[in-house]
Length: 210
Image (tube, rainbow, N blue to C red):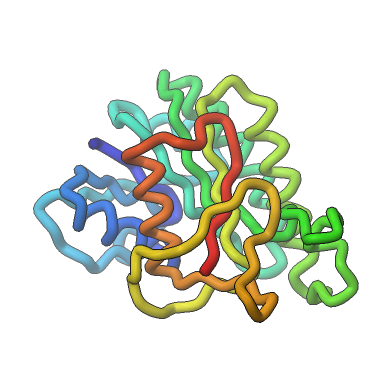
């Protein structure tokens, strides 16, 4: 499959690039600064994109089969998630692409009580702006005609190892026997490329955790 990955220079984006290449896909890494992509591979191509600009997005994704966004802005720029969502939708429509997979946030997942994770008392205050921005971006994707999939990670995403084993949920936070919600970056990438290949969550959200 020919896939373009936006946000490919971030921790999660890099892992998705590597996982997609491992599975023999043709990958284009679309980033603001091409020099941040140091990996070399015969099936890896690099292009420049401004994810906040619909015309730039259209130029970057045109001619590809599917689009993955692993974009994550820096602290203080959380609202860029909303701008990027709008630019992605408009850019893809301009380019004539329909299939979009997004790495989103966990804050809008429901807890066991039905309360959103980001509204629970123990949710870290410093993460609320990005959680709220992710939730607003999710609404943008839901209200388009694109064939989107929104992957909400576990509450905690950490560098680790690729096991290929995890549990899948929909709108509710997946907890382990200790009441914790965790996933490695590597297995989050596995889940995303699984969805790229299988398309089990068309116009839907899913989540993964151990």
